[in-house]
Image (cartoon, rainbow, N blue to C red):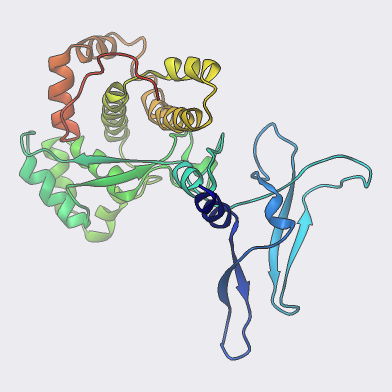
Length: 303
């Protein structure tokens, strides 16, 4: 038990520190424990609605030393905690390496399996177009929370593989022919999330993504609301961490479902939402869109 505690303490507090070695050109790195500095908790400096004092750390190659500067002034007598940034990690990386889940993590993402199912219409044409794009027809692809404006941030919330699969899966026969016959440079715009494409194709792509994310949400044994209720009553530290991690995944999935109010007031969308509630429809849509059969939850399970 003591050995596990010691290993965990060292592994979660070691830092990758740059060092400038005289016998090498450029900069090398080493792992080290830094007294006092490793006592600081994590926080991002640009978190909305928070005014935490975050120390920005950089390496001074001239003096061969780490230097920390505070993002705001702090009084000598003020009892204000100082935070540092542990890095641009996902929730899974924070959980494994640091033992916590970061709320409102701007770098949070989810990895799920997607596939172009051979049974769908125009499968050969879609598979051929994906091959021309240099994209796989199946695999585990990553995505973060959906955003209303792609220009609002420099980061892309969805991988090239997934956005390509979503667009190609949403195309009509005419569109498949057009993009297959296009010049290579024009065709490659399908891989870019921020690319300017026809409005109808974009709308169909959003509906495809919303449908897939909705099905994935249905696979969990609990809902978002049930997880939120569990966090209010469950006091077990490890179970709370797992619930928080699961809830974060669901919130990312839900953001794609509500990006364009897909399952809301429009009659045809409401009808599709109603159809999706049947077990048979869930199974068929799951096989069609992701290649993985839908497994219904039978009861609320404890994390």
